[in-house]
Amino acid sequence: MALLGHILPPPPPLPLLLLLLPYSHAAPCHPQPNATHFICTEPTLSTFPSGLPPTTVAISVEFTAMTTISPNALAGLPRLQELHLSSNHLAVLPEALLQPVPTLRTLDLTDNLLPDLPAGIFHPSIHLRHLVLQGNLLQALQPSWFVHLTQLHWLNLAGNALLEVPPAALRPLRSLRSLDLAHNHLQHLSADTFVGLQMLERLDLEGNQLRALPPTLFAPTPSLRLLFLQNNTLQVLPDGIFSPLLHLRVLDLAHNHLQALQLPPRSPPGPPLSLDMSGNPWACDCSLLALLQDAAPQLIAARATRCASPAQHRGQEVTAVSQAGDEGCQHGGDKQSPLDH
Image 1 (cartoon, rainbow, N blue to C red):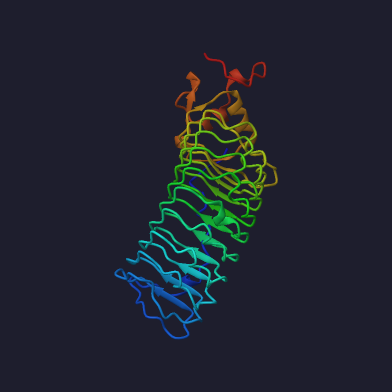
Image 2 (tube, rainbow, N blue to C red):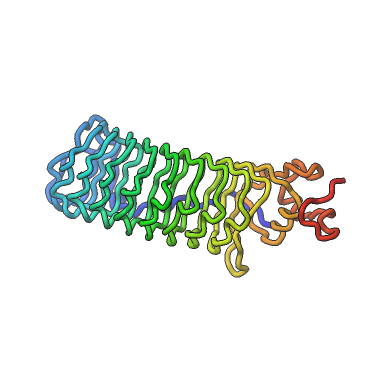
């Protein structure tokens, strides 16, 4: 059983046109005629700049003191594809804001003060591919936001105050590849939370308050390759919960309250599963030891992956116990618990 260092891949980068430009600490806010890109990072700016040329395809107004934006701020920009408004002080957005820019592909609202969004704000954005709402104050998701976002590939809702995901609210997002719900206040997920997300490859639920998961939660997401469940309060994994995930490559279960393990099915020709199961009170019984011996996954952070029970294995590395086997599991084919000596 191989032991690896931390190899969890980072989230996929946004294909931003703005990354092609030099980025100064405080970019001036003076539009240039016929320019295609506009960057403004003036800390004292309080209103959205005006006079942008109709040739503009990417706008970045970030790290300013802007608190509001007018409904017609984007009027006259028919070619706009990217809008970056991160790290401002926006607390409200007008419902008509995006109506003049139906070609928009990327919208980044990271680290503002938005407690809610208008119900129809994304209705004109049928071509939107990347939507980042990370680091706001959202407490609830409105299903109406997602009705027309059938081409969305990346949705980041991390670092808000979400209490739930309404059942089937995400169903229209049939092209979604990456969904980030990390660091919210989610305590429960319904069985149909991810219905419709057949293309989803990356799901991040880290740092919520999830105690249990529905047995069929991942049935609608057979394309998942990366699944992050660390730093929740999961007590038990339902039998077969990962069975639909034939393509899973990374599974992070670290720092929950799990004693028994479930693994996705593996096909021998495929790459091994990168598994982090550290920081859980594992019961190193015959079932767990046999599962690990059969699957032989690569373990990450194995130093914190220790047995909490039974007594003869308490405090030992799970990998060491699995590799060595247990004599009590070899007699009579008992798969429930090794014999206490």
